[in-house]
Length: 66
Image 1 (tube, rainbow, N blue to C red):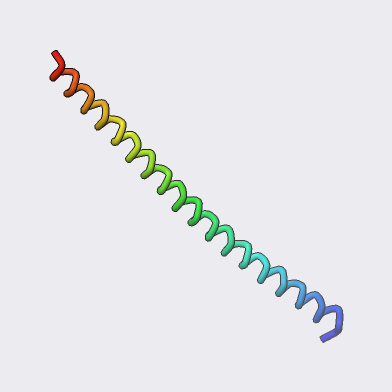
Image 2 (image 1 turned 180 degrees about the vertical axis):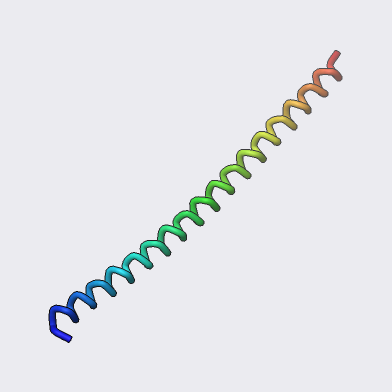
């Protein structure tokens, strides 16, 4: 194998490894974002549930005042 062929082969291997690492990093990032989004949605759900339960409490307490 000539030096130029070896060099081209090494460059191709390095590019392939870099692409694999990039794909892994992108997948991990997407998993992190999915987990963050799920957490955000869950927190939002509980916040809405809490607010609606407080509104229900107020509705019942206003009935008691009459």
